[in-house]
Image 1 (cartoon, one colour):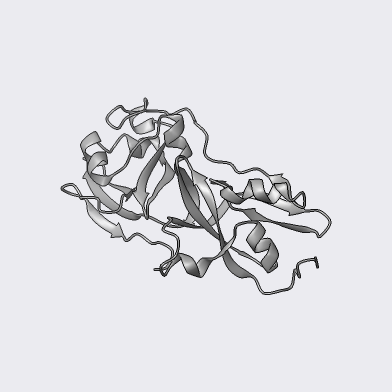
Image 2 (cartoon, one colour):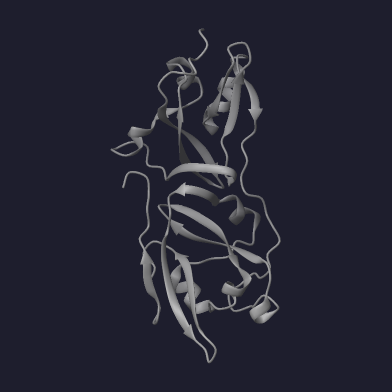
Length: 225
């Protein structure tokens, strides 16, 4: 089999990755041969938009992002590429592919607080952050909310905005961390004090009902928009 041409056209492909008990499609650019595409379970990303597999779609994952698809390599041909979760076993069975990097998902981390309304100690000087998530485009999109901001959002507000706090292993494995797309919508409210006017802004879930005094500040974005 000829070595993949590193100067060839880079096409948008997708592999299926595990997110807890469910799956998602991760879109990326690659220029591997048709035979490798089939062996690795890669599909043309355009099939995800019009009548293709009904999976949530993820685009652009950074170095510290989660989850990550398994990366396989053909040492002789000098080819390394991503592999769909369901194709790993069959690709390895051919004895042509080897694991370069195993698939990973977000593991459990210690939380500063396990529920909104239970403040992180320190008040205005609270330090650290809480890993929180909202549902957007069928995914549990997560980010670290600074403790000082966390302390300013009540439990009723968090429920209305669709913000949750993962606490179990299963909840952490379902998280999507540091993806370019999708991107949830945002909302804010102002808090007037005797000293200043504070702005509290956060990501919100798709279809969230904005509580009184909250205003939308940005729409959600997803693959194919």
